Picture 1 (cartoon, rainbow over the protein chains, first blue to last red):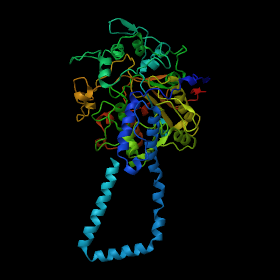
Picture 2 (cartoon, chains in turn blue, brown):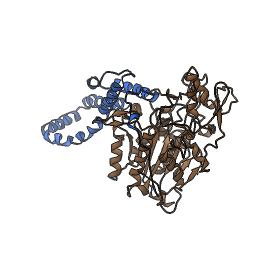
Picture 3 (cartoon, chains in turn cyan, red):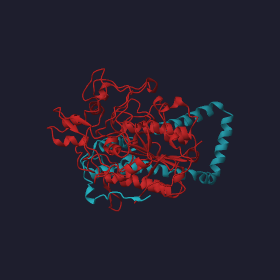
Picture 4 (cartoon, each protein chain N blue to C red):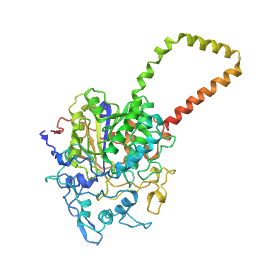
Length: 130
Length: 406
């Protein structure tokens, strides 16, 4: 079959200052919404919320918030490296084992220290999910 | 099982922006009668009552500014021409009248929403129209909601927009999950590819914020094709705006949203098609669906369907303050018809699919292929009852006559 030729796209179609359409206005609002939920130390690295007339500002803002979120997934491999750190802290492991032995002898202490910790962890995981 | 279905490993969906079926493909009917397009006699009224013919005068850019309204209330007007009576039926003739209202005072440019592209003229669409005539075109693929982009795209990702008919922020209620989360839980792979960080994704609130591993850029998609590492399911978002890349090069919007240049979108579609078509490891086992999210306020002649009650989720209702029509909406009607094309070497060339589809058909089909035992209580009735499109991989021998684009 013969090759089908596309229309060339003229370079004067390019207009990075074109006003935002309804879709881009809504997208900006969604990005503002999720930027508000960033931890304050991270939020401070994001450019100020732009007006819809500020096309370059909108681009910078969306790119920055996207970059922050996407960089989170790149943190995952570092978590995999955790076992190495464990091996270095043999004394801490021994201390923890000693503590576990002592709490086994005192169930009340075990309950009061262990449960809240795991609940707090679950709670944090949920709030970061939704 | 047909060999094409047996071989199928990847589904790729490209969702473009805001063009109706007749606007892009209606002209094809003259030479390809299987396409439910236009016969040249169609006309709709303007605000004076004068009938304006549907003409093949669409241009690639410059005609649709301001962007024709396509919020719920405006689409309701486009479909019913302002009739709000309980016995109304879709007449599909309010497009010019509502655009004239938007462009006060009335101007001839409001007729532009009734312009279509041609097949043989200088304003043809060589990529989209070739794919529509040489693979399978859906004659009845409708937007899931008679409304704007975000609620319609939600149906592709979640099988529902829940109570939403607009562009507002909303969260996904339990127990529903995105198709990407469901695939991950089932041990399958999926990615939502946005164009780049500046264009980014429209699924920021429910997905990008929480599920970063499900995302990649368009370059990641191209790289995955070349490395034969395409996920089981890929969803591609186009570039939504003109902007420079990191080296200052011009990146044109490729989404075809009015008034972005339609030719840039054609080039984008061809790039994706060519990447799959030219990879012998992907082409035989990949199904590509090109579909538009909604009609963008542009004319289409096919009346929008009412859904059978068995397809309606009874818990979802959009209240009058959301619809802005004075009436609630029970998610029991579909939106305006949009272009949709099914591409695979196992699809009958030049075929037209007559059955009714909507965006919930996307997660429904992905689920059918990759998670056939999925618990229906974990997804919407709309999705669970939507038509799926795997059965159109009917050929016993893989085609060797598929088009190439330069």
